[in-house]
Length: 103
Image (tube, rainbow, N blue to C red; front, side, top):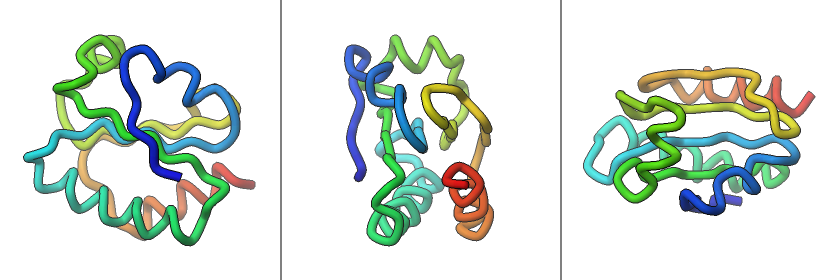
């Protein structure tokens, strides 16, 4: 399921299960491409939560993570960051990382 975080809801949204966090900007081309891939993955892998964080609307969370480039992806498992990827990555790589989260 794709959900949009706020500064207030972010920590609760990543606390359990397999979660992909996508820090993005609305006008960022690579962010839009990652977004399309995540929408496809959402349909295929409903047991993975996808949390999108708009860097302009969530400045506190973005600052906390020191986001200075987008897209910026964090992969959580049961509340812990297990992987971080800055910049655009391929659909194949994204699927591989998510597969590792699940198993």
